[in-house]
Length: 229
Image 1: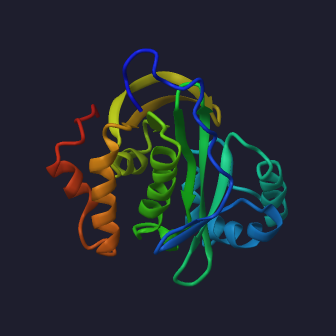
Image 2 (image 1 turned 180 degrees about the vertical axis):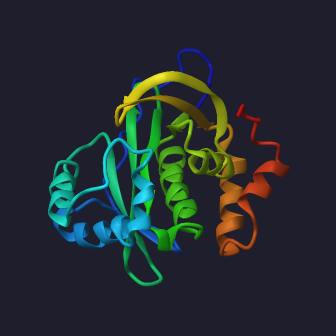
Image 3 (image 1 turned 135 degrees about the vertical axis):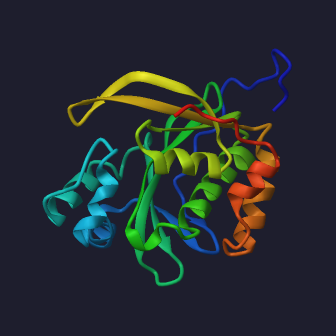
């Protein structure tokens, strides 16, 4: 999109509720009754897997029934727009991701509500899931900005944001209350002007099945600013 004043559209298109196919994962619009059993297992078994819920607003869930009921409240929503992440290697549902805080009048959205079971962690799953949605937002819809926010204490999420090519923009102190405690929020973003270089790095990393480090590619390009402890 041209940055000259007066040339922006009145609004950008909304993200599309459709499947997105990658080499490693498939994203499908959330279907609670179809997805609940495998997602519950991914997020709750073994017990150590439940650590993923620590920094999220919800979970862990007492039973698969409770989890399915929660998913049913999400599946028809348009913001956040939830997707189930399925491994193409074994066809198992391994996690969730969403497009959220969609602001079409400014061409801005956020990727969030991201979690994966232990089997999918440290695999190409999140790299490709994020890539597929960034490609949709930037290439298909022409969005100007995509954000990533997380609990400032969530070191893994902060590291993931930088690895994926988002730039740290600041810390929002006592931004919200989550599970009875103050949460500082770390704020990251990627712009449409950043995207061509980021996209090339994603494609190179994914084509190598992760043997080429996305972190190294982004560091080499000078794409990540340091962030405070």
